[in-house]
Length: 255
Image (cartoon, rainbow, N blue to C red; front, side, top):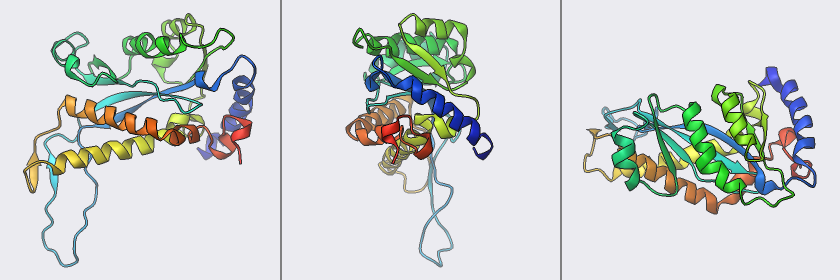
């Protein structure tokens, strides 16, 4: 971050002019980014009384399996529905047989590597972005801020977003840890709460120590849905994500 601090500061000077004005409304100034959620979230250390020769830990059978969660937040503190991407065939058994039983507050897709690709990005535009920006007043031009991830910059994706009347701005590569609200203020509290849900799920298992079954996709979808509902009630976290000291998105947000 120190190497790109100057570029990030220049970008913020430019963007503060973009986000202000009579055609803007903070409800429709949006930032979307993806974050991984692992099926196994064990801590890397243990804690017990001094002198213990054996410390039992509880873990699951799979510590590398993950899903990708597309998070979208607005500058006024609004949290849009999430899209969760699981590993699998886009139109395979998981999509056909399982998704109907998952929490309806999320949207779901399958991708071969559980990544956000062009097809998933287009689905996010159609299912999450389009219904939300359709409620914007006529004089408001919605703004979507994305990082420079490859599928965010594809012509087909950008065109589909612009066809909704939404302006797109991309954050320069390397600057997301300073300038992107989802990175700056949302991801850590979100993952802390998901990890807490995972701990509660693990402790509810009958196994006292050793290896137990892996969480299911439904478990993960439920953790994410419950966490998002919790964070909606704590709107201050989302608003504060736009207020990082010299990288605050709005002049009145700076101390």
